[in-house]
Every structure is written in structure tokens, then in C-alpha cells.
Image (cartoon, rainbow, N blue to C red; front, side):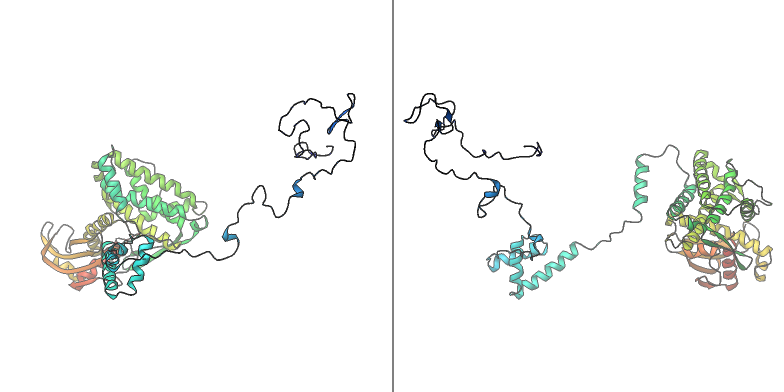
Length: 467
């Protein structure tokens, strides 16, 4: 026992030996001594009786041990069974017992077979029968085609209107106590989409080069910056709306003029280092505050004037303008970092196009004052409130519609009776033209009527762009 582990099993040689105190009947306990011829009352007791045997003892059978088991005998504890996959042998092919069915039964099963509603045995019997019976094979083809009409293939892509319908259903069941004004929802949606884009880009991509493009006069101009610089630009121009609503101005150093370009230059100049991703936090917080403040102010606040330096817009139109510029510059950022980006929802896109169409008469008047409009238009000026020459602007695609643009004066009435030209444009292309990303000469417009009027309207749309 010395040197062995007390918690391990051991064999003392008596595991399978019979108990000496047990007789042949299986009784245990002390037994009565029976004196034999060679015994005496005082003889010592031994395992073979008092005094032990007097002659040679017969040999005892060997004590069975775990190592003395016959190798041909099965083990007392069977080994785990091995899987057929572990042997490397091929798996047995499933065998189907073919059903012996007559022609009438097999023909009745064709409909269930076409719908994949048969059992494996029935399907095997039908398919074997189709190889020998031409009439049933033709019927099976007709039934399979009919099943295809019952289950048309559907796209796995989600319905693009699913989110809008779910949100509208939730708001119909439980309207918000302080709803966001309808004219502020495009800005809310576009800032959220841009923020989702910014969350997906890395630190290095914030310094990716971006080129801002717009029109000045009849020439396209541009300014090179970075992704962070674009967000800083949006932050400072959104600050014009923030000041109108009584919020803090993000521009610490005052600009020479309150124009978007001057404010952006002042912000870039005041920064000791180029803007980094740290500008995202102030921009997003300001966007949240603008939407929240507009909601608390109520629908009447939409008439508050927002000054852009050279012109003013009511707050409801200024929020649409900020939504439009957020989408345009988000597209610039997405192009710089190779990120897919979609246009706004049709409802919001229609509101942005409507704003651009309503601003075209003022843009035409500004071009006339600058001497950029064709000379022929000055001979057709009419008093305010009087019908005058008009151009029909037809916007195709989602978010489109038709607008009559007065050509002679911002105060003139557009009239279909005085229509002199017709332009047809895609909605996104019109927005790209108004953003200065597409030149008027390259705009793929369907044109009909007065060429000079068409040219003036296309250049007026491009003049709506700015830095």
C-alpha cells in the first residue's frame, strides 16, 4: 500500500475469492466445528478447517484480474461506437421503397406533386411514372407552371416606404404632444441621414478632400476643403437659423457680412487647426436644437424672417433650404469617401423642388439687374399683379410636378394663356442644377418654345447655388 494513491482503486488478491465463513449453501456467519479424524479439540483453526489439511492441497484456480481477461470475450464496459463519418467511407444512399400504384392513382397525385405536398415515396413513384407516360408528363408541366403563377417571385429587399408607413401608423395611434412642424421634417431627416454617414467613416476620412461647387454669374466656381470643413460650413450657415430662433451663434468671431460664404470663411480663419471630426458634435447638437426649438415655437414661427445677408427667407423656407444644402453636401462627402447615398424621400424632394421653383422669379430679376439676362426680356416687363409671359417647368420622376414661372417680373402672375416655353427635367437633375453641380448647358432638358426664355430660366436655376 505504501507509495500508492489512497484515492486510486487497488487489488489485494481477495476480490474474487469465496468468503471462508460461507458454506456451500450460501449461509454466512460462524459455523459449528465438526471434528475430523485428524483433528483435535485444541488444534488451531485454519481456512481449511481446524488444524488444516494433512495432505497436499489441490491447486487453486488463478485469481481473475483485469489483465487476465480472455481477449475473445466482450469487454464488461463497451467502447463508444464510432460514426461512419469518422471512417472516411461514403455515406449510404437513402433507399426509398417504390410504391406500386396504378395509373389512376398516380394521375390523381399530380396536383399534390406539383405543390410539393407528396411524401418522398409518393413523389418517387410519380416521377418514375412521368418518365414512361407522356400524357401525365404534359399534365405535370401544366400544373407546375400554374403553381408558379400562384407563387410569384418577390424581392427580398424591404419596401422603401415601410419605415414611413410604420412611423405614420405609430403617430396616428399616439400623436406626439409637441409635433415637429411639417416644414421642419425634411431638415430633421437629412441631418439624421448625414449623421449616419459620418458615423460610418474613419478618422482618416475626415480629412478626405472635398470640392464645393457653385455658380457665380455665368461661370462655375469651386473651393477645395475636407469632410470636416464641409461640416463646419453647414454648422456656420445653420447658425443663421439658430440666431433667428434665439439660440447661440456657433461663430465666435463676427464675419464681415452675414452671408453664408463670409461666415464660413470667418470660421475657417478663426480655427487654429483644420477642422477634425470634433466638429460633428456641435453640428449635430445644433441641428437637434433647431428642430426642437421650431417644434416648441409652433407652426406660427414659420413666418419669422431669416437673413442671408443679400436676401431673406421665412423660417419655413429657410429650413427647407438648409435641408436641401445638407443633402447636397452629404452627396459631396459620400462621393469623396466612396459611400452610397440616395436622394431624399419623394415627399421631401418635392418640397425642395417647390422652393427652387418659387425662387426662380427673384433669380430672374436679379440677373436682369446684373445685365445677365437676354435683352429681349426687358421689352416685356408688366406691372405687378398682371398676367405676363410664363414658362412651364415640368419635373419628372418621384417628387416631381409642374410649375408656371413668370418671366417678366417677380410680381407678375403666371398664366397658361401666356405660356411661351416648356422645360422638362428630372427631379434630381433639377436639384443638381440648382446646387451648381450641373451647368445649364449640360442639363438634359426637354425644351420647347422661346429659346431665350429657356436659357434664362436654366441659368437662373444655376444662380440659386452658393457656397
